[in-house]
Each structure stands twice: as structure tokens, then as C-alpha cells.
Image (cartoon, rainbow, N blue to C red; front, side, top):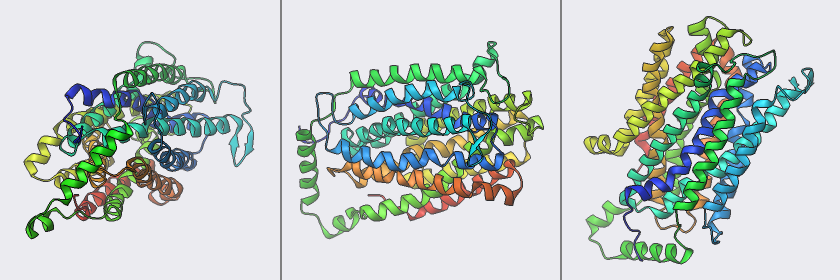
Length: 447
């Protein structure tokens, strides 16, 4: 085998199916962390600081996983051992984290203004995000390893579809459990059962999905990958006319990294503010409360998950349409920029919405931006890395363009909240950041 073959739809599907379970875990974290820490007693101006740990762990872990998996080969494969280990770790932490308020830990301040239960939750969050990152990164690497350039857009669109489908499930769990009668409120400092059971079920689905992928995917051996890379190099070394050579000249990996990273900076900072402040913003906008112990605030927490699910549905639909829209516009870059603008408009429109159901329209638009963020950066970057034996290492480093913006946004989040005055206004800030990101798409050069 010299060239990477075209893969059937179901092989592409199996390659990313485990991502469905990983994304359920990530969705539960994204939708409920601010709610959990607010319930444990955190001040709204502190919330962004709790969000520093997830991207920080991602920035540390994913490059390490990339380097190690580049050098790994065993009977189970190259990337698969890491995603399986990450999934096992995630399951264990998902059982512990939502019980942070139920383990008899002190409710008094221990250090840094945090109670014992908040510290336990903080360390659980650190390990949860570490394990999710260990499990998540191999899926992106496997697409880079096993899919040819012609099928990359389709492969990442399938991955985006499964990712957002997992998000829908994860986001809806607390709402569904509340609907069927599970308690959605609890005593002060205790996480409601609707959230606890959501994490339990999410953990079970995660391990099941990862087992499915490990049983249905057979990775290419190092020898096969080397032969494919050599074949690709020979194609590039074939004599070309001056016009063809100029047209086919690739931008450097560094330029591609920086230009995509600039777009990523604004996009991921925007979504960091959504994850941090949307529960409080919805409670304030639609339930008229900022009291984290109130029934209205917990209902807003459930509704936040529903809105995230609507966003994920919008992402699923938009991801399925991305190949067609790119073809219609004759440009992946135009499709990328358009998607981000739609997401920005969705965020900004929330300034004038106080009906919970009207939020769905805004979140459908936000979903368009999210779908593009999950697909296009990896399409552009893996194309620039085509045939590179250090694909995993580069993709691990590329993850810094996702994590660093979130860390910076989290650090300045409390100050920004003071400046703009409310959590609702922070969502408008997110919208402005997405639109700036869309303008920066112009600087990307396709490999």
C-alpha cells in the first residue's frame, strides 16, 4: 500500500465514534462546571478562575500525548492505547466530581478563599480535563494518520457531527432527569441529583463508545505510514511547470500555525465566556434571579444545558452542510468566516432576549460558529502536515491555539465582568470576539 486509500463512510464513522462518548463528558463539564461551583458557594467574579485549569491541563497534556503516541506502536495500535487510558481515567473522575458537596468536606474557607468542597471539586476538575484531553487528542490524530487529503473535509465533518451529537446528549441529561422526577435542588453546598446522575450515565456511555472504536479500527503500522509518506514526497518531487510550481507552493507550517492560531485565539476566548457566564446570564435574563440557591437559578442551569443542546443541534446540521456550502462558495475560508460571523450575531442578539425559548434562535446561530471551529482549523493544519511523521507532535502543539486563549480569557474574565457590568454583557463580548476571529480568517493560506 503506497497511497492512503479512500475509506468507506462506515470506516470514517468508526474512526470517530468514540468521540461521541468523549464529547458527552466534555459537554457535561462545559454546561455544569459554573453551576457546580456556584452551588458550592463561588462568587460570579471568581467563576472564570475555575475555568483556567481545563485549558491549562490541555495545553500540557496534549503535546505530551502527541509526542508519545508518535513513538508508540503495540498490538493495540498507535493512538488507541492513549484514548482508552484517558477514557478509564475520565470515568473514575466523573463519578467523583459531582459528589464534591456530598462527601462531608468542610464548608469553611480553607485557603485562597475556597472551601474544602470547592478545593475537592477543583482538583477533580483538573483530573477530569486531563483525562478528557488524553482521550480526545488521539481521535484528531487518527484522522490525520489514516485519511487522505481528498476525504479530510468529510472525515472532520463526521467527527464534528458525532462531537455535536454527543454534546446534545450531555447537555440534555440534567433537564431530562429533572423532567422524569429526579430532584433538581439540594441543600446548600450540595450538587442536585439531576446533575450527579447525569455524570454517572455519561461515564457509562463514554467507556462503551471508546470500546467500540478500539474494536473496529485498525491503525496503519509505522511501516505503512512511512511508505505513504514517501509516496507523497515522490509526487511532490515530480517535475512541474513554473506556473504549477508557483500555484502549488505551500505556506510554511509555522505560517499556517500562526495564521490559524490567530483566528483560534478570538474564537476560543469567546466560547470560554459562554461556558463561564451563560448560566448566570440566563438566570438573570429569563428568571430574574442571581441567587444560586434559588429554584429559578437551578432551572436556569437546566435551561442552559437545553440551550447548549440547541447549539449542538445547529452545529450538527451546519457540519453536515459544510462540504456543500464550501463548494457553493468555492472557498473553505469563506465558509469558515461566514460561520463565525453567524455565531457572533447569535451571541450579540442575546442582549435583547428575555424569553427562554427565543434563546434557541440565538444558540442555533452560535452552533454554526462552533461547527466551523471543530472542522476547518484541523482541515487546514493537517493538510499542511500531510506526510509528516511527527503529525501527533504538531497536533499536540496546535492544541495550544485552543488552550492558551481560554487561559487568557479566564484570567481576565473577572476584570472584564467588572468592566461590562453583567454576565449578559459578557455574552455580547463573546459575539464581538467571534466576529473579529472571522475577519482574521483572511490571513490563512491553504496548503
